[in-house]
Length: 344
Image (cartoon, rainbow, N blue to C red):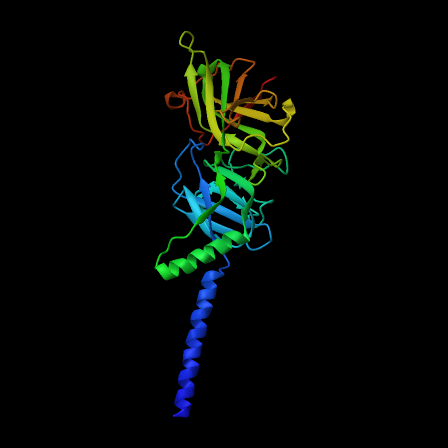
């Protein structure tokens, strides 16, 4: 009987201790509900179907990655600390042309364009990086979001009250409000050509472009890359079909941050295949001072426009046949060639 009574007393004491511990945990939690608001109104390209919020505790605690289909806000349980945050559309794995690098630290987080290969392009430098056209991405970064011990204490008091009232309502503390902006630029190229009736196809490269973008510093990096322009449209002059222009458009991260608008910072190399299907004319241009910037209402560069004129008319050549005499918008494998360099 004494053993049974002792066992009962110990059991009751343990249960009482357990309940008291739970109440103490409710009253003294380690975290609070931190809210990060996100406004996508400045990202006019598309409405995201999801977003990622990177949360960096300044104390050095592990990074928190919050990915959700809810794009208006994120609610995360956070300890008392100061936080830096980065927001971007979608998740990292959903981008096919972009790689997220060094995301474990706020200061080093960046995106870079993925490398690509080409059967026709030959690099003129050993360190030249040939990269893809990026998908649309918008991002924003902020520093010094604060979760105070008082916020945690308020949460504890509310949790204890909620337990007694059987309610789940707790205060959410806004620690950051992000307005992500598009970081991708469109590059538009137009080349005026005399003798354009002799043109079958075009392809080009543009070097000295930005390879990466720092998410924390909100600017392009100084690592350079080359992009290809392989899809062209042709427009003939209404009054003279021997004259006209070709146009191409690509997406890009834009120019490196330290770009100083000097001509030799960017080289545009245009290669033209004539209707004889063998004559190729290569025309290099130094264009670092000719890239016209177009800004949006926020002062961000959204386009780079480049207009050039081929200095000499394309030579008259005999078409290889009716199937080869039309202009090809997309680059195919060019056959045997006869190179002609033009003086510029």
